[in-house]
Image 1 (cartoon, rainbow, N blue to C red):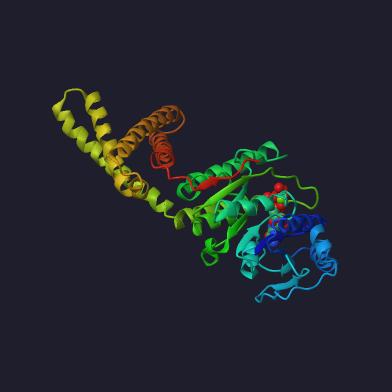
Image 2: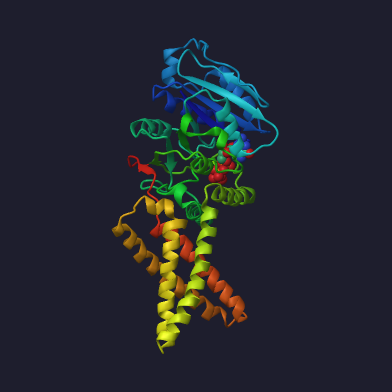
Length: 408
Ligand SMILES: Nc1nc2c(ncn2[C@@H]2O[C@H](COP(=O)(O)OP(=O)(O)OP(=O)(O)O)[C@@H](O)[C@H]2O)c(=O)[nH]1
Ligand SMILES: [Mg+2]
């Protein structure tokens, strides 16, 4: 059974078409389903509209209405318990239920989805926006892909080949790209190969969702799931993000702030912060090696430039060994042949040279504007950030998790 959670806040005008189209798309798969609408303190009659549909049966797909015009009630329905109020819109003896969960306190998108999943009865859980920006018709393909690809999770992606952002303005496109890029940089292991970790449209098998491990806050429940539950096989289906035609957006600064906190907390939970600290510590040993090597070499050669260049090369080699065998040991042990290690060494040297260039260029430019210790501090910070993120993304790149699904 598929349990699709749709969080709502003041979406009255979208409810009827969303429920009708969703029911038709899920009924087309032939699987039983429940549509759980989790409403947070709507004031515009959203709840009344859902209750109306529960009795009117207008949400049933045309096939279902024909198959069971009498609208018999299902014996499988049971009321979930808990702090939230819920009711069951029971379908004709067959495929679908329409349920409403009402919350009036602690409203938050991610916890709304989790509340829905906790009350859900299906072995496949899902999430979709109510405002039709996620085309419900895609549910049929999502479910098919989940089964065909034996995936733990299938997500609708705006960024994979065939996907699109639709009618978004420049600023919003840029914001979305920046958020996706930041998350991928900060969580390279978790998000390797996943093009749209911010998608709010996906299906996941219950056993791969690890509901008790999730600590959701804010908007990005998929990110939370990918990082904390770690589904093994992820598939993507392209889609074009639709336009909101009714109701108003709840996007704003609060979700942005929540997102930044969420990424930081997931980076800590998945060991990425520890990895950054380790990379920094290895870098500090490199400074000590650099000094020592320069001191020794300066005694052996009369050329200061040669001694400095050789000492730097030795220090970079030291850093490589520390990162290969400690900081990124999980990635390097997955490809331990001499050839792989030499390839990584070549990448590391190349990226370190670029880092040196970044440092030199920024110190040279900033020394005109700032006292030299401040200019040097900025140069070192920029070069260190470059070294870490470029090596995490290239030298010790984690194998991609996503399985590409059919193109649109
Ligand atoms: N239950 C619940 N649902 C919410 C909350 N905030 C937003 N939603 C719902 O979550 C879905 C996504 O919210 P939107 O406001 O459409 O966010 P968005 O798609 O990023 O923004 P737009 O593109 O401007 O529509 C919609 O179905 C909203 O009704 C909340 O606090 N609680
Ligand atoms: Mg929306």
